[in-house]
Length: 208
Image 1 (cartoon, rainbow, N blue to C red):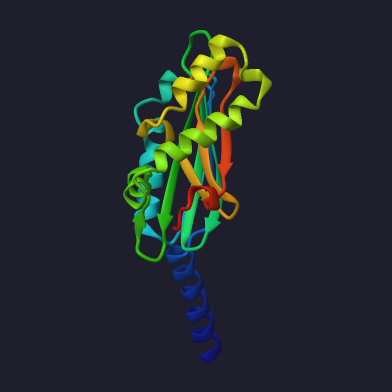
Image 2 (image 1 turned 180 degrees about the horizontal axis):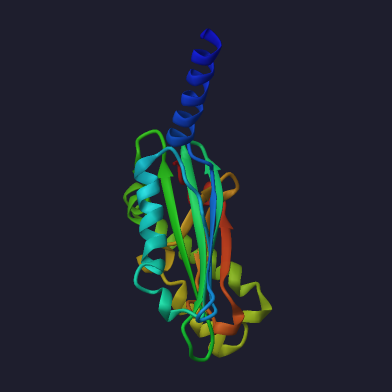
């Protein structure tokens, strides 16, 4: 009787752990055989409800009511950890017809200690000059790349790296520095792809 009771307790404990502490990531693959739509979505799950809710908001935006519009939808992610932050980047590609697929980048930066998110607005509040620093560093970085020497491309790069808040809203916190993401068309033509650069915290004089 005691063995049965002990076994029951162990099983219940495992179930509770699985519910409260889900796997660190989950891969969801959906195939629609009737229309040959391929959906491959991978995203992480955590024990932090607020973070999971934000992740689901991003994922559901692309899944809900849009499935029949896709030829394909791929979502993958990468995780960075820095101090008390979980920092995520989602790479999203989908095709609904037209000249080429669409590519988008979404980021989340979550502080597990205070249960809050950090955005570019928070960084600006810490340092009113940070957009100028981001712009200066980005332009110097891309000016050293021969691919950006052509006038049309160079002009796009200058426009996409101005000190506008919108140009730096996609970022991650990493141990190596602040990672900034530039989507396609932001700093160069579509076929150049997207870019990311890592800016040291020391250069930004930023403490997070």
